[in-house]
Length: 108
Image (cartoon, rainbow, N blue to C red):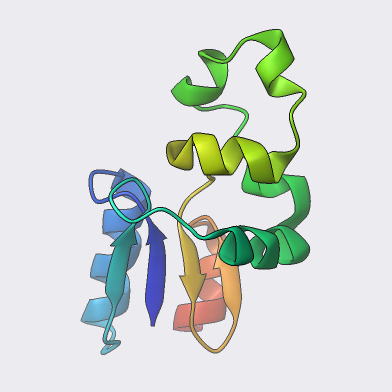
């Protein structure tokens, strides 16, 4: 199972810990240290659409109005931390660590 996120993100750490404690072998890819490729960004945008961009983040608030109008893929390429996190790839691919993601991966 693979988690895309940030190593210092609470949601990413909580997801990794919960998945590991349920017997999953989990690898966390820090997208700040190892950014998503253009193909990966396109793949995740195809699945999640514009929800992939976290418009509630500190990074988003720091963008100018003109930057905010750029296409989501370009924004994520320039600002990896702008990605909503975590993306969890397992039997299914989910975005965030909410009830839906937990149910999809843990069966809760």
